[in-house]
Amino acid sequence: MKFVIRILGSLVGVVVILTVALFVAGRFSDGPLGFFSGGPFSSGEPAAAPADWAFAADVDTVELQLLDPARSRTVWIVVEDGVAYIPCGIPNFRLWKQWPHEAVADGRAEVRIDGKRYPVKLSKTEGRELFERLLAKVGGKYSSAPEADPAETTEDMVWFFRLDPRPAA
Image 1 (tube, rainbow, N blue to C red):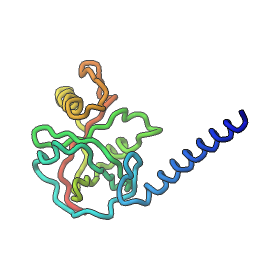
Image 2 (cartoon, rainbow, N blue to C red; image 1 turned 180 degrees about the vertical axis):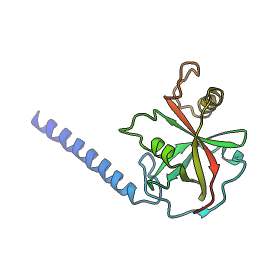
Image 3 (tube, rainbow, N blue to C red; image 1 turned 30 degrees about the vertical axis):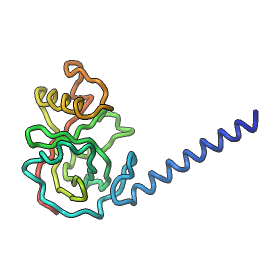
Image 4 (cartoon, rainbow, N blue to C red; image 1 turned 90 degrees about the vertical axis):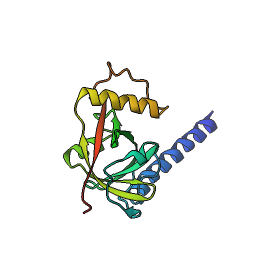
């Protein structure tokens, strides 16, 4: 029995060490490492943010980097009438998600799609009608999105950020 406990303890220790190593390595990487947030972008061709984001409608995920603080993450994207939006589920779980509040405080960001970096300003959306349309888009696009009844889903449960053009710094 002691042998089994020792083996399980060792396995848990290895998983913890690898997870911490990925978090640390992510902070110094060029963008996110899959699920783990990453450092600021250092590669990618600079491009002006487009007036029409229709080309991104079929893109599953994009890399999003806030400028302050300069950290990046992988996020979903939806496009409604040529305007791109980034959804953020459970934005008030601050222990895990600080970026939506940082984006409200300073919306300067970059989005990297297919090796191109677009300077954007994140603007938190308001309005129930738009919220319900975007929630339906997320549900239709992402099979892993939780089933959400728009009538029962509040704007405290999901935030949407519109990607507005921003001049490159």
